[in-house]
Length: 437
Image (cartoon, rainbow, N blue to C red; front, top):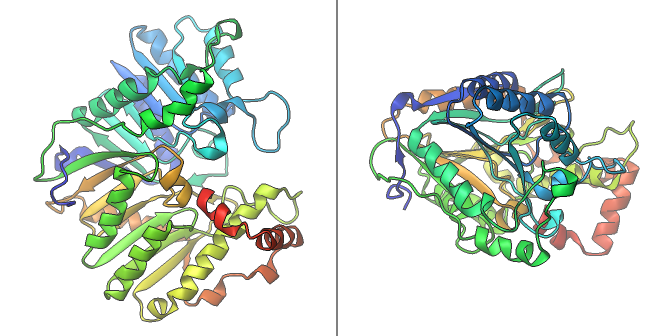
């Protein structure tokens, strides 16, 4: 199925790799500055901090130089309307958007997309920085940590693909299925002109989004890229492609995910892959590299239990597959680099097919969030060395597990974490929580 999956033809030199957040930021700002026709940005959020403001000011400067430049920034509606977790008061990012555009001579639209009626039920997790005929694809959002504005960073993947057809396809999908929909609102309008979507429109939006596809001039031969999109469990092209990648891999999988909590169907596919005698490398963030991790010396809040719940999911998987760890078929690499965090996603199969995506490969991503990804088919082997070099770079700050017992048990967790997780077990809420994490 994957060999017959159509895609957009790419030349060997159409893809380039950025290996760190500083290079990503530099490339993004350079593309914005040189833009001549359009800039479409899709991210979970653009934060009201130094990096977020720098990018927005760069967009305003580009618009001032060329007032006819088509600029659209898409963010999750609910995430933009609230402050950071734990912050009280009206401190959402939309206030920054509103103030900037009110004072701009040539404003542009920052669009809030309500994938579901509540944030916990699903968010806009669409990714892509589409600038003229280029696509910078990364799972990163825009804030100080993702762009390493200061010392701390959140590690992600960053690829630049030069393709007019891919850029056009991704822009057209946004225009046809998102920005033109009645459920979507402009967050950057003044309060007096603000139009919030009708509840019924938001309620039915998920159905309309589930019909979205990328349209493009397709080929089934040669090096190509297939843009994929998915929302919900039914007929989800992105999820189905992940499973096919695992099932059709002949030798080796290289998987990156920040949070280890695979959907049951993916967990079964991985186990079957191992039983067939094939290899898997999984790179996952240590619990301390999770963006929800709260150091023991800081005040604890309930959200801080999430990294520990993911860690227990990883321990359970490693224990079940300990035989594969021992014979070298399964290598689990825990990433940790000081106070920094890990946000990489994607799968490479046999170093021939490579999925770069913002999907966390967990039940929430597979059922609730709007996700996308780009599947690169390397028929000529032109990109093999570059992907292997990227993998080696990813492994720099990792420690390989040799036994599942290296992963902490509940007994070693801080008291507030043990209290929450014991309560969850007593209420038998584990099953429900795993479906939305």
